[in-house]
Image (tube, rainbow, N blue to C red; front, side):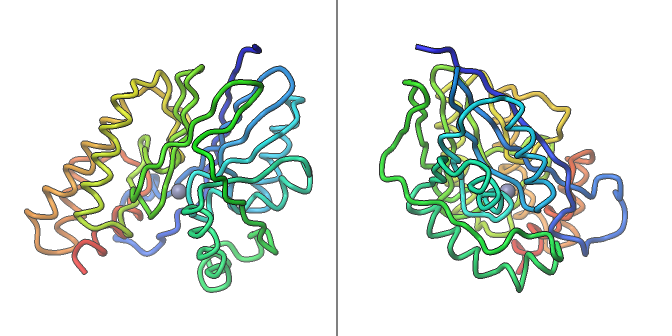
Length: 277
Ligand SMILES: [Zn+2]
């Protein structure tokens, strides 16, 4: 059997939440990560980017590996992770874009928000018409005989999320189940779903991965498994401070005081507003 390797491409982009209290301007950005897992001849991509330009960069980067792209695996149904499928399929027609049935449903829903949401934030930059992933009904698929396992993560930062586990690399391509140096997006969550997210993180900690690649990370940060615990701690702090505060501003400021250097405070502002709504 061939040896597997992996690489990541991380791009910085504008945050989705752009109306937030003043301050921390240097932290007002976010990133997306795409992961390429590759053997001798073939490769699997985990997640794509949002914009036409970033997906062009992604394509160029993949081509430098000189592998056949066999699968594009989408971890969950947020547009920032799958809008590149169209461009990738044009360049690699043999590649199958796949996701769990739950994620496919979420992607189709997201596809209805392009005009009202995504186009407003990234005018003329969203690839259209959208191409959606197909549902995969198996719990795993293969890359040159190596098993890639789909982990159902339930509701984390949205419904029906997953991570991809590569046992032979001890690699977890975690999608949005894990955040690295960036405020987690909690605007869609409830306290109940945040507790579900924590239980999922405990399951992933038990896997004891060597590498954990977050869908949103500070590009310079490494991929050590400690970020599983950091993501869990962030959720525990948010739950605690939500109970200890009454207003959106108080919750926002209390979290900022604990996490002053985290990137994308806009995401935290959205989380605080949703929690106090
Ligand atoms: Zn995301």
